[in-house]
Length: 189
Image 1: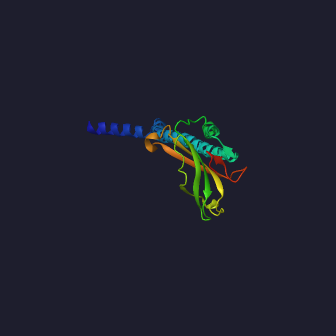
Image 2: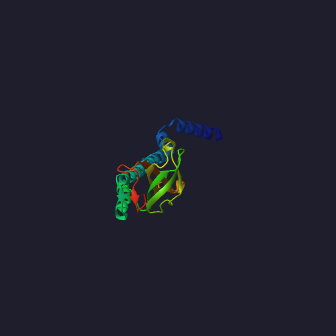
Image 3: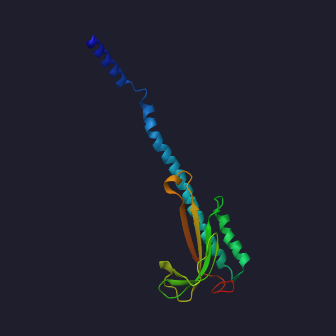
């Protein structure tokens, strides 16, 4: 009886090994977590890149708007800083920090000082504090005024917030004043 049972067991095992009906279900179950992760990651990456693009555009917009004035009063500055929220829409601008500053070069090797600064959602740069210019602007003559627009956006990923936490996206843009050598804000130029 043991030989017959063993033979029957081997036949059942052979039939099980030759049966391919469940292979695709097993393959699907193995691949599904990877595919879901890949899909959610691509959605998150696309969303993050869109926020970074809008943050760059917001910094550019603030610096560009500021550079078009000769004199700026506090209410106009509030409108300029508020334009960044419109640029980042439909994303929330609730915790975004927008700063615009005028900096003046102090030597021909990339050093500059803050002349004035204004901020929305944060603190502006301290007047007289030093700023190191990017390589492309380091050879400007002493006394050249530049407008520096800065935006910091705290990006919270929808799916990966547990892994990454909040990601602070920072972008800045430099513009020359267009209508004069410097721009007056709060009676400082």
